[in-house]
Image (cartoon, rainbow, N blue to C red):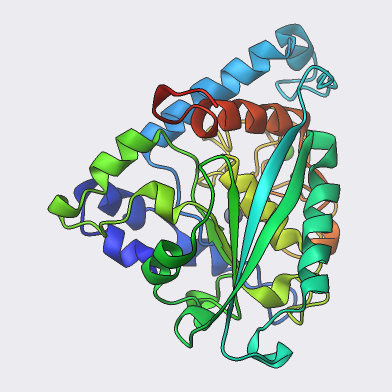
Length: 325
Ligand SMILES: [Ca+2]
Ligand SMILES: [Zn+2]
């Protein structure tokens, strides 16, 4: 995976050493399969930007402080998102298979359309819609198992920074279900990933996108993660959202989204009533798409998460190099 390559640069080493990729997935799940997301943990700079933008989106939507305080810091007030304009996201799908049979990972188009439908349903209340532009099929034994990320992305990535590329290998290293990259100010990140510093030579524009093992698509075999919610979760990262458990623990800022209760660790299965931070308001957000529960248990984004995704999309993706799109 790209993480080992990124570790060559100092800034990225910080990112890689604190990813917690294996730590977060090391808790036993209810069944044999567990959710394990490989999206890198945010750098301190990303955390700072994330926090600032989260506050801005809160203000923008008139999220009343008074209401938040009344309920002990977790606002239960409905955010008015009527004034958020619906955004249409162009989607490019890339199937990474071993051969041309379905069992080789050569997905049927109907299954891909079903995945896009799940995204549209899950993001409808957040006012995002997804529009499939093209499906590419590649037969490559390395790409099919999620290896050579640089290779498949530099060959296949389509569209602009506003557009979503979805890569579907059969499986991924380290039992990951998927991973994505947070949106960034591109020029800033391209500098840190410069080839002259021994980096991968690929900029974050090329790496941008979501990689998901294809048996997590609707009708896939990776139960209980086969209802297409891995895509929803990873696209949440692509829009800039952190996990609801943040970097873990009850004392930190969690995910910096004030209407998702703080939780100490990822929730697995569907633990209704789970409350790992009893001294912090609210039960754990086990139904939130940005937690680790089973697909059937994941049903929602919080109002502020929805607002934040719009702010991040406008700030990072529609405003590349200061040019507003
Ligand atoms: Ca609590
Ligand atoms: Zn994740």
